[in-house]
Image 1: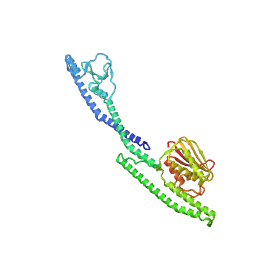
Image 2: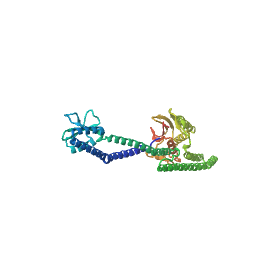
Image 3: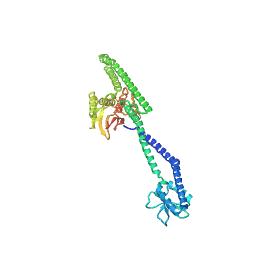
Image 4: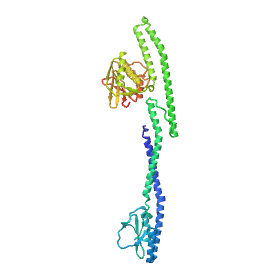
Length: 435
C-alpha cells in the first residue's frame, strides 16, 4: 500500500518523535536540578558530617582507643583509616558533579590540605587526606557514598523511554495513515475512471467520517453515470427509428430529386447516425469490461482492416510489443475513433503504428491534415468541442477525442496530439508496460 503524498506517515512520526525527545530532555534537566542535585547534596552533607565526627574522634581519643575506633569503622561502615606515611602513590580524583561538591565541602571544613584521591589497587574506593593536630590520616570509603553515578542509569532510562515512545508513536501514526492511504488510493483509482471497492470506514472518528463521505460520493457518481448512460442511450435509440425511415424515404425518391441532392441527403443522414454512435460510445462505461491479455499490434491491425473494408486508405507499421492487460472492446473503440478522426479531418492515407519504447508501448494514428495548434490540444480533448477552422471543417459531435482521452485514462495511459514530421497530426496513446 502506498503512503500518502508528502509522506504523511514519516512527517507525523518525525513531529511526534521530536516532541517526545524534547519532553524527555526537559524532564532530564528538571530531574537533575530539582531531584538529583538536592539528593546528592544531602547525601554528601551526611557523609561530610560523618568525616567531621571521625576527625573529632581521632583528635581526642588515645592511641589505643583510636585503633579500636578505626577497627569498628572498617567492620561496620567499610571505612578504612590509617596514618599517612611519606609520599604514598595516589592522584586527585577526576572531576564530576558529586566529587566537585564533596571536594568543596571538605576543603571548607578541614582546610585546603584536604583532598580527594584515587589510589592504585583500590578500584571503586576514594581516599581523603584528613589532617588532624596529631597526624594526617588516609580515610578510604566506597565511591558511591559521595558519587552514586546515577547519570548513566538515568540516560539508559531516558533512552528506553524514547524507544518505547517511538514504537508507540509509530503504531499510532500507522493506524492513522493506513485508512488515509486506502482513501488516497481509492480516490486515485476513481480519478482514473476505475470503480474501486468501498473504503473501509475504520480508524478515528474524523477518518471514518471522511471514508463514509467518500463512499457516498462514489455511489452518487455511479448513480449519475447510470442516469447519464440511460439518458443518452434512450435518446440515441429513439432517434434511430425516424432516421432509418428518413433514409428509406430518401432512397425511394428516385427521379423526384436530383442525384446530387439525394446523395447529399443520404450523407447527412449517415453523419447523424455517426453522431448517434458517438453518443452511445461516450455513454458506455469502460469500467464494466474486465481486463485481459491483449496483443496491441494485432488489435490495431484488426481495427485498421475494418476501416479499410469501409474504403479508408490506411497503412500499418506494427512492431512486436509485449502483451498488455487491456480492455479489448474499449481499445477497439479507441482505435476506431482515432482512425475516424484522422479520415474526417486529415484526408489522404492514414497510418496506424505500434512500437515499443523504454517502459511504454506507443499506439499512433497519423494523418496529413492541417494539424492542431498547440494551444488547442487540451481543449479539444474535452467532450462536445470542435475546432473546424483548425481542421477541415467537417461536422461532428465533438466526442471522438473525448472518448479516446477517457479510454486512455481508464488504462493509465497518456494521450498526446503531436505535430507529425512532414506535416499533419500524430494522435498517440502511450500505454505503460506496467499495464
